[in-house]
Image 1 (cartoon, rainbow, N blue to C red):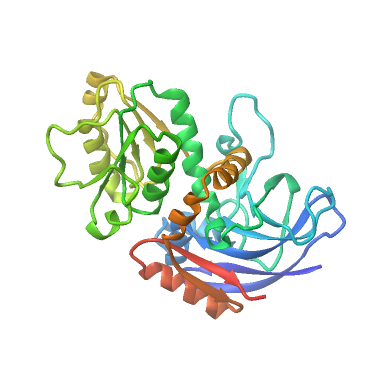
Image 2: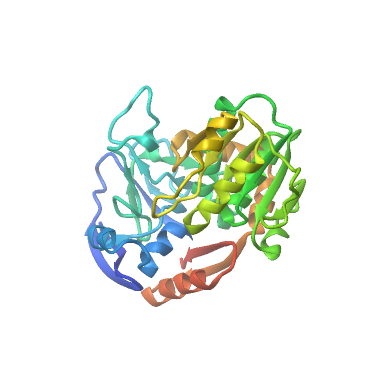
Amino acid sequence: MINTVYRLARARKFEIAFEDIELFGQNAVVRPTHLSICNADMRYYLGTRDAKIMAEKLPLVLIHEGVGKVIYDPSGKFNVGEMVVMVPNIPAEKNDVIAENYLRSSKFCGSSTDGFLQEYISISPKRLVRLPKEMNMNVAAFTEIVSVSIHAISRFDKIAHSCRRRIGVWGDGNLGYITSLLIKKLFPETEVYIFGTSYDKLSYFTFADGSFMVNEVPKDFYVDHAFECVGGNGSTVAIEQIITTVMPEATISILGVSEYPIPINTRMILEKGLRFFGSSRSGVDDFRKTVELYKEYPEIIDYLGSIVSSVNTVSTIDDIIAAFEKDAKKAFGKTIIQWQE
């Protein structure tokens, strides 16, 4: 079976390639229907990653957030036509201690192996999770980033002490929105406060107990624990403010990605006895938890739908480029690619 793939050859330049897909092996075949552009995709597309990394990675098929329709499944687990979310993490081994998304041998679609910007995807049935029939597929498209938040919150729940009166989330972007929404749903008795840099973005966080511009936080305001969802150049300032604002023995979850090392105030970490932990990506169990959460709290889907910034129907390379250019100009939200049937 001939498959069309769309590879990023260099910054802002896609090329078409054709590959064979084995129809009689152990992999399922999925036709992507809705994809979501992530900040990581944009760093490749815009060429803002380190030149050495760009040279090593490209050409590369982008996108690791997506859902699709099952075309073929030799395992019989999925019916033809069923909608599934595709798990981009591909483990090469099983470890009883280290989760699949932290194993150095694992591959990740759109980074260390080709992503989902293809006509068809050949994928293990074990890397697929069935979606509810009534699901909003524009929201389902970015289930991956939701599962990343689920993963971090699940780890936090195991690590952090039981005093959780207030949790602060630093970052008013997509990750901060999703993480704070899930914290509020999973810990309904906990007050959730958002710390950001844009009044317009903070206005989306209607479910939160309160929000602050980072330069307007009262000196006597404290939180019991914190999630950092800033990343990039803002990480240094965010983490410093977190260290200042959290109570002693707080647990701090680091989710923001920074290209370069950042300084951290170790003196105050020691004085307060703080615990930091990092979370990256997610595994198939996190995807299953996320889909179950969609079913249990359908209002989550409505909240997530409010951050869909645009839905772009594509059938050509020019359409794909237009969607990426639109994402580059957006201030907030998720850009969705919908393949034309």
